[in-house]
Image (cartoon, rainbow, N blue to C red; front, side, top):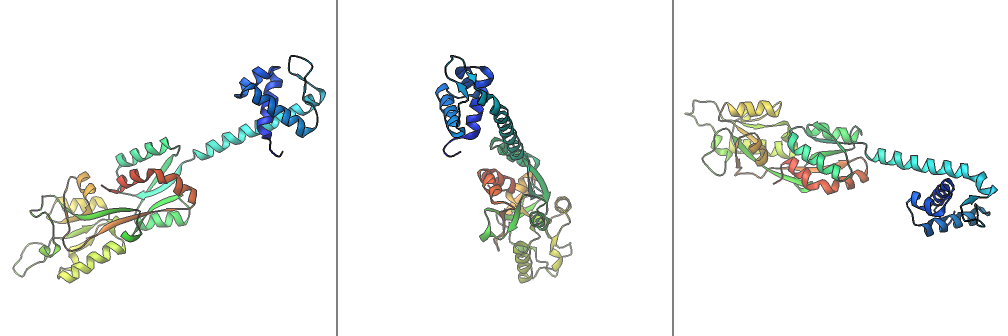
Length: 291
């Protein structure tokens, strides 16, 4: 039906026929009366016959109009059902893989903002390697993946945090070197699973070796909880972001010898999902610890 909205024309036709009035039918269809008249006239021209008897003041169906009305009503019902299903499909939660240390508070704010954009999020907390795998296997529709700083959309500088405030404003790992006369245990730097990725772990272990620290002085913990527990009970340090240290009630300092950054990118199965998440970029950054 070139140049004519078939569904809109049928909707006007059905509405006017049900109410016996062009004025009432147009109001019920949510359109001005002249628009309803034009749509019905275009439909009559397309079908090749009159739908209403124009010789009366009421909207009376012609025999042709009565014959085609049931099909027009079915088309309108199908169009309504299609729009309903489309709205429901759009509200289907978008499953997003996120770091498993993200706070419930930050994720809740992200979820609330997403709903303002007609988007429902379903969070899947996971460590870095698992997040990348989940999006490859399409178990999630999108994931915040760990990437090097130069590939990142979000960047979170890392430092070290301690239970007791360090005396210096910047911590140099060379101060952890154990001297010959030192009797106490060697202080350690704990990596949480989130930072057990090559662009962070390998740079830190290379620095450890270059400074002459013991291999056991840079350790990857099984979980963030166990890493924090060790730091709370010792003079050890936790590699983390400033925002994460504040949440854990630890005292954070930047590192002196090396710049370490958590980089994050958004990996999505469908490009449309990336576009739908784009307005949430700032809230996502807050969840990741950007300041």
